[in-house]
Image (cartoon, rainbow, N blue to C red; front, side, top):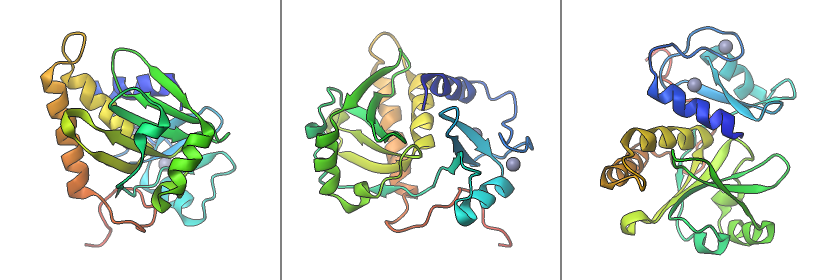
Length: 210
Ligand SMILES: [Zn+2]
Ligand SMILES: [Zn+2]
């Protein structure tokens, strides 16, 4: 994932005027649509229902698209401190090359850390869900802000959404109180809609025929 993609995602979340379109076939997409990770650009593209289904079916991505799954799993006991990232709110993504990068979802500029691979291996080995985290399309999202103890395996586009939430509520240099209330609300929403472990990867959208 590039910072360019992240910045565009932030931009998109604040300017709702223009309609998102499927990055593959260009039809307009509804809220809650799926995303695919483009291996060539390292960026996310919106995916309409038909295109997402295509990738979901057999993982066929023509060699360069990966569907962002929608499982959200609350984790416990992840030794986040052992990952050596000096902030209380961060998301961790494993790249296709195996490198693990942590980011602080602040609108004030991109702050990133490369996580020591052996530390990551040790920490993820203790948690089967975390060990099953897919590269590029899923993230470990953690927060210990205001005594929070949030550890989640989430689709990577959730992290983009969180950046948008933070940007919308950020005031002054350090963010202000409002931003942390917004972050808490974001995690509360995850908890309400969180999927159980083992839920298969499936783009978020209403079921057909109901
Ligand atoms: Zn499409
Ligand atoms: Zn989109």
